[in-house]
Length: 436
Image 1: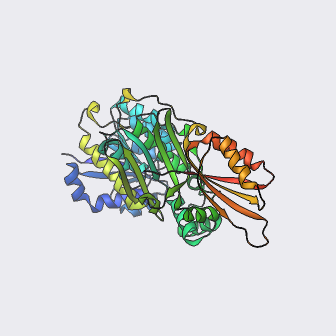
Image 2: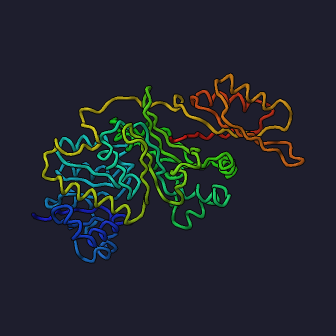
Image 3: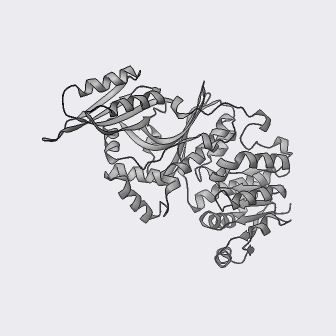
């Protein structure tokens, strides 16, 4: 059979990894795919560097439109990133009848519904294993491996930058700002790390996983998103004393009222496997009704780990290129006409447990006032830690773990607690998940 011809848009970190792994493992990949897969055209603004990386083995152009419009290209790999030009190119490729492989989670989280609809109508595939958790095959696990299950919830450490920062804060007792600078120096964090540290990157990925898990459209605009910029080393230390670790989690959960879709720092029991995922590694914990809990762990970024996912998609498309479109695996696991309209819950309606830390005046009656406010808000206490102040220090820390309650109850209670004359500053609130 004639080789599948591939056009690559962007030959940066992941693009160069894809080119190198495909070349290095060409024989093995061909045996798996049933025919040869060849990158025959590369588009990159830096054509000189692109020619150097490809060693003259394919055509190099500086205009990506030449690739998506080329009649001989079967599959387009989009590795440009962002929402603008990448969307236009993907839509052009689909309109031209070309299959698409992308690692662009931001694009799919915001324009996925439009892209998948266009692909379905044109009878082509859009594959995106590399868009979530790098080299971990979580998309295939959710879409195919767990297809017999009613997925109940998933929770993932899906941003390596923030996990590295939190690991360093815990190990070294350093504050966020200090560790962020070190992460930038080591190359774990970008010069502008906003999407990572504010939770946006993780929310893009959680949005995609929620659609596949529950058969709903991608709805990034309804995700609740919090980053790690306000976390303090003090809270990480107190969490440890209570038997928990703090991770930035992307959570999607099915409830009778609707779907929870949220990203925020979360206390996890230290004995859970996912709580012990350190450094820049990723992990996703998925709970299905039949299989129970399954954990997927590995490198969530990097040149060759992400290239592994890109090439897996190339092989899938090559295997299925001759299949009737109605018999291919649907983009979001469920048949397009079977997606449901289960609502995404507003954060105020989410039910979980909470870690609350407050600094109070060291005087009688303070704790009684706080516990009364919590009781009036129907919030029960699971555990409490009261740190005695240093000699001569007029303030003490009180840490409370609550049982499950709705977010709106906690927000209302915190407002009343902060209004007490004996409470200094703001109450720190971090959500807690047992993940069992």
